[in-house]
Length: 340
Image (tube, rainbow, N blue to C red; front, side):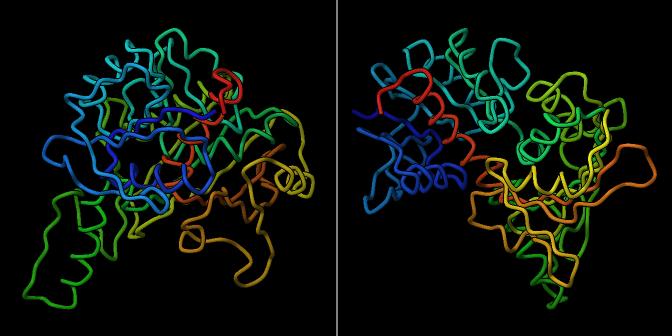
């Protein structure tokens, strides 16, 4: 016996990826509804070898459905997620709306699956920010061994994190550079993204950090350990898919780089590619379409007593969004609903 599953925002990049991953991982779906806004109603989407037509989110009745994977913005989520939850359908939300709500668990299944039971307070589970998700997957097994005191992370985030419009802007600006008569000024991003990097993601806060940077701090504390100090600099780079992170970690206890490498090799959701030679590391291009969070460049930091550096790469549309949401659904099914 399987589940009655709803995918909300099925025509977007993340919604389509959710459908792909539900099929790839053979999630036990008895019945599937794909929803979109009224203007997209009737749009066809693929689920395995089936083609489904989207239904109108505004008129959909969530009663009798087991879980709904939301891949829409915070405004739409704010309107429709409580309706689904009230109807008895567990919401797994990819927006930022509920991430910092103390009554809503924020889940990365490799890190804090036990927190899934907190869903019952509001019938809602939050999916973390894409840059946070891959980082805490890397940090968790190391934290279990040597207790992390402080993390300094710089991110190199792909344009797909800003949606289809972000990818289109990179594509169009790149073409326009070779055709000077076809100027493409920035609209999605604050400055030219083609052949450039932009140290600005989301809005600036009074502290001087951006909201993206604040999210990484707040979410790491909620998911992993509130005592960990985190400081982040988040940068948009001209890469279509795949977020990269340079992570510096300070531990309470000494952790040798070789032991760290062995620990990460055995950890769930991680693939270690770490050879000290040309090409002996993973780049965003190579991680696209993969489930794993890839770790490379593991090395001691000699400037502090108990420090390590590492390089972390993941497909942000998968582990950073759709895959993590499906893994949450799997955890919910295995630990709570137990139908499949």
